[in-house]
Structures are given as C-alpha cells and as structure tokens.
Image 1 (cartoon, rainbow, N blue to C red):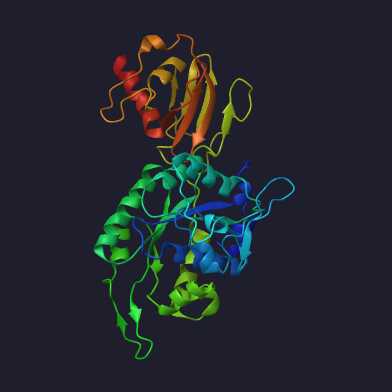
Image 2 (cartoon, rainbow, N blue to C red; image 1 turned 120 degrees about the vertical axis):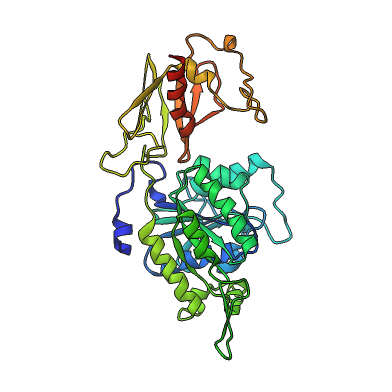
Length: 399
C-alpha cells in the first residue's frame, strides 16, 4: 500500500473519521525511548506527505514539545467554533500538557481529570483531516491506557522495548493488556538495539541482541524493526529537531523510515461492527450499521446489533444470533455496583430490577465491549464481547 493509498482510503462515516488511523505507541516500562520513537515516526510520515497528528498522552511527564521544538507554557488558542488549535512542528500537528504548563508546574490530576484531558486532546482539537493520529502513551497499563482503549476505536498499538530481558518481560504485559481490550498489535519496535562506535564503526550490543525479534515471534506479532543506540538521537531530541530531520541519512533515521513504511501499509481495521457508535434506542438515532460481510471479521467481534421487544439481538461471524432479554442483560451486569470486583459475587438483587426494564442507549466501549443504559437509570455496565458471547452458553445450560 502506498502513501497515496493511505490518503485516499475512504474512512467510515463516524464523528472520528477525520482522524484517520488512531495508533497508540506504548511500552510496559519507562526509559525505553518510546516518546522519541513516536516523535520520529510521526515526523518521518509527515515528511512523506501524510497528514499526521500526535497526542502527547503522558499528562504527568510530557516530553513531545521539547523533542519537536515547541515552546512550553504557551497555551494554544481557540478556533471560532471553540476547538483547540494544535501546535505544528516539522509538519506534525501536536497537542500536549507540556503546552499548557511549564516544566516547574506539575500536573497533579486524579483519574477523572486524566480522562477529561485525554478526551479533550482527541475530540476537542481542530485536527482537520488526518491520515494518522499517534497517541504517545505513558508507561504501564493504568488509567491512561484504559481510558483511551475504552473511549476510542484504536486502529492498533506499537509496543516499544529495549533488548534486555527485564524490558521485554514488562513489554509483554503491556502487549497483553492491549490484546485484552481488542486493540490490534501492529508490531514491536526494539529501541537502543546496538551502539555503533562513531570512530571505528564496531557495534556493541549493550542491552543484548535480538530480544525484540524473539518476543515478537513468540507472541506471533510483527517485528517492525530495530533502532540503534545513537548519541545523535539524544542530541537531536534535546535540541528540538528530531533525528530524521537533522541526520536523515543516519542508520537510525533509515530504521525509522522502515518502521514508518510498515505502519503506513500495515494498519488493518479490526473488523466487526464499525465503531464508534452511540445508539439512542428510544430516539431511533445512531444505530450501528452491520459489519461488511466481505471483510475478515474476527470470531470474537459482533457483526450486527438489533433491539426490539424480545431484547438485544447480537449477530456473530459464524452466522448465529443471540437474543438476550433486557432484564437478563441487566441482571448479568458486572460493574462494581452489581458485582464484587474481588470475589465476583453478585451484589444486585434480582427483585430490585423491574420486570419490564428496557435498554435505552447502547454505545461502543473501544474495540472490545458495549455500554448499556437502562430505563431504571443504571448506566455503568460494560459488557465485553467475551461476556456477551458467554450469555449464549449460560442460556443453553438453563434450558
């Protein structure tokens, strides 16, 4: 697939279609150079003619502005329609907490505020039409990762690691977290792969060799490439000019170019129901269209949703359709108010649920679940596709 193919590819008719492909750049631990990888990949693709945006989703430790030469503590201006106008550097549109506060002003935020800022960075920024929006995530598997996976239909994730065993083991955890929320793994990048002596050219593998390729093979995910350890990468980042701009002929820049080429042609939509959707059943608005029958639809993703007096009908790729009554769906809720999170013991008393309870709204939760609002006011339930499929076997046992 060429860059022109990416730019001209028709996007789904959704409120986020103008953002193109949403690609998370993640790592299990800090210190692996994830933000440096994200910045250089974004600039590489922009220099190839793609329309690229970059969200610095590390609210507590934003580093993207400094790497791209964007002044900190310079709040962006608002457009006439009350959208935030992103900064632009080296052809990449950027939003970051580092633009809202200086280096001496820490972001002291609780979970709900983290969610608010992340949603604002994606949906309330005047991005224009993009081909790709990169999300540079903080290390770990916490609030930020889960918020983005639940709120937005991520096209995929790039996992960055270094070759040593401790980094690879933690990268595996981050990768598994993405898989659990149905975010496709686009591949693994091995950063700091080997140090090339600038005098004699000898390569020293400080953090061992080939670990990224081995873990990619063991997990059956693509290996996107290795980026050598080069002091020029550090100098370029500190100076606000990415290596791919300051030293485009270097080995590291060539490695970034190879990874960028793989991403521009390798990000595959996950199939199943087109997302995002927000279906207000009572108003008859926002019902999701059925999946494309000619696409490769994974067996664990629904391909259709319908709702009538009988309940919620879920179609699956194998041709089966499971219909669950609204009350059974309500009673199977696994949120913290309905089930003990530690033991799994039900907390919801069936007698407390009206016999004629109905679903009033259904929306997607990322790529892996739906949320349901009921006529009794309950709206905190998240039903993973695995749980929805499991309702079929539960009903069969009751019969």
